[in-house]
Image 1 (cartoon, rainbow, N blue to C red):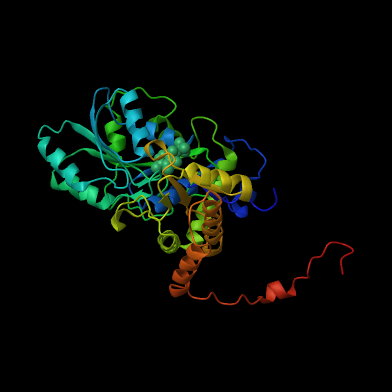
Image 2 (image 1 turned 45 degrees about the vertical axis):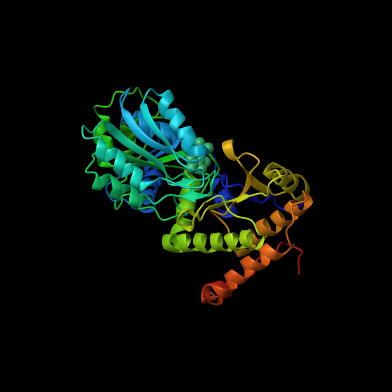
Amino acid sequence: MSGRNLLFVPGPTNSPDRILRAMHVPMEDHRSSSFPALVGPILSDLKKVFKTETGQAIVFPGTGTGGWESALVNTLSPGDKVLSFRYGQFSHLWIDMMQRLGLDVTAVDVEWGEGAPPETIHELLSKDTKHEYKAVCVVHNETATGVTSDIGAVRKAIDAAKHPALLFVDSVSGLASLDFRMDEWKVDICVTGSQKGFMLPAGAGIVCASPRAIEQGKTAKLPRCYWSFEDMLKANATGYFPYTPSIPMLYGLREALNMLFEEGLENVFARHHRLAEGCRRAVKAWGLSVCARAPRWYSDTVSAIMVPAGFNGGDVIDVAYRRYNFALGAGLNKMAGKLYRIGHLGDLNEITLLAGIGGAEMAMSDVGIKVDLGSGVAAAQKYWLETATPLPAKKVAGPAESAAPARRPAGVA
Ligand SMILES: *Cc1c(COP(=O)(O)O)cnc(C)c1O
C-alpha cells in the first residue's frame, strides 16, 4: 500500500529516520578498546532521563518485560511479600510475573480507568507494622487504559506510613515522554523499554536501580543469571557487557538521547502534554469519552477511546489498517472490543497526530459509529492554534553553508 504506515499503537512508536540511519551500522567487536567510548556516555546520559544522580542505568538486550523480571529477581527472595495494583493489562501482567516467580503478592484491584491509589498504599503499609512488605510495585503509565499515576504521591504515601518497602515503577510508556524523577520520588527501580518514548525498535529492556536496590540484591535469594544486576554492573563499570549487546540498538539509543537533549527534556514533556490535550479535545468533539475516569488520570502518551455500546473497537482498528494503512491500538483483556487507543508518544507533532485523529474519524464512520467528519480534527486544530508554540527563527545559511558548492548528481542542471 502506498503512503507511510503510521503507527498510533502506543508501542512500537514511529522511529525517526535519523534513528533508523544511526542504527544502520556494520557490526563491530564489542570487546574492542574503543567500545567503552560508546557505552559509558549512553549509560550516564540515560541517568539524565531518569533524573537520577545516584542510580545506575542498565541496558539489557530484551524488552520491558525482561526489565520487570530484573527488578524482581535482583532484589527479592522467594515468598517475600509485595504490594501491587491491577488497573490494566500491563499492571496485570507484572502481577502475574510476581506470582509466577514465587512472591507473595497482595494484588489490589482498582477500577480500570484509575491508577495507583496513594490512600490505599498508605492504609495497607500503616497496618504492616512488622514491615513484611518488601516492595511496592506500580505502573506509572498504564498503556492499556491511558492512565497515568502520580508517583510523587505514591512516595509520599509510603513515607507517611514510615515504611521501608522498596518502590519499583514500570514507566515503559512514560519515560522520555512524561516527567519522571527517580531521585526526587526515591524510586528504587524504574523499568522501561526501547520502543516507546525512546522511538527505537523493541529490543532493549532499560532499567535504573537505586543504590538501595543494588545493596538489597546482595542478600536477595531469587535465582538470577541473565538478568543479574551484579554481573551487568561489573562489566558496565569498564564500558563492556557480560554478554553480546545489540550494537545497532546502542547506536540507535545514542541518537535517541541526542534528539531528546537537543529538544530539551522539559520541551519533550510539554509537547506530549499539548498534543495529548488536542487528542482529548477531539474525543470530546466526537461525543465520546476516554477510559481514564478523571482528569487526574489522563495520560499524555496514550488515549483509550471508549466506543459506543453495540460497536467493537476491534472493527475500527481493522478498517483503519486494511483500508487506510495505519495502526490504532487495541483494547486488551477486560477492555477488549470496548475501546481503541491512539498512542501519541515519541516522534510526532501536530500534523502527525492530525493524521491519526482524521483517520480514526474515517474508520469509525466506516464501521457505523456516528461522528461528524472533521469535528475531532477541528477541535484539535483549534486547541493547537490557541496554544501555538513560538515560531522558530528562519534558518539563514551561514558563511560555511553558502560557500559550499551545491551538490547535484552528475547530469542534473
Ligand atoms: C509495552 C509495555 C510493557 C511491556 O513491554 P515489552 O517491551 O513489550 O516487554 C510493560 N509495561 C507497560 C506499561 C508497557 O506499555
